[in-house]
Length: 267
Image 1 (tube, rainbow, N blue to C red):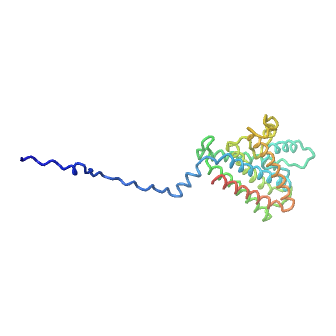
Image 2: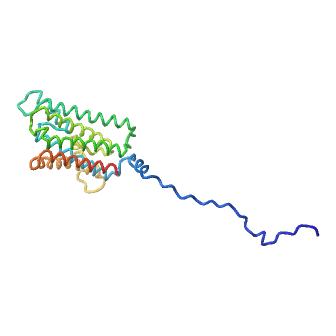
Image 3: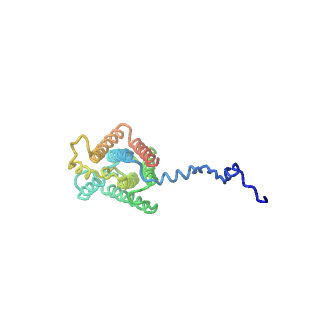
């Protein structure tokens, strides 16, 4: 008597109320933030890089073939050929080559690579992990230079003739774009590809131990072969475009290929 009653079994078994926490729905990342993160990713898969570098090599062939056939015996990408031609011009051999256009092309090509190197350091690109926006922007720059040259041709600012000083503008702009593209080719992580210097690819292909293998570890061999064939195809296409449609159309097609390639690097 006088003691407090024991709690009933029902009360003892009743659950103690606890505080519940509702999970907040995940926050959606804004589209522009996702886009910014995407374009700073490293280059896409090896297969897509192979396709993009193949397009770049074809574009190089189109430019060199159409320019060499029209406004002067000068290459805007093939530096090796230009150095040989420069030697012939300086020696004053009886061939149709001039010193000044070759020098302009060589200097502009060097400046294109120099500019790409500056942008590479300024944007703090990591070795072996260059961003997609770097590849896309440099390729887009080449496209713009191609289109500018096409406008100069269509407006008759630059006559299609292997003489005259105004044609030096064409050599300078196109060679600068090609110099930047060669830097991208070397940074893409596929050393078997080269859009301009194919001598190494040629000899590497000839000494490849898997040269005649149908399967196995043949991807490097295939890349070298594709690089060489792409340059040949581009040269043939460039020559036929110039022959039947003119230099201006060749430059527009070259610029269009660069635009497609730039989009491929970015997405």
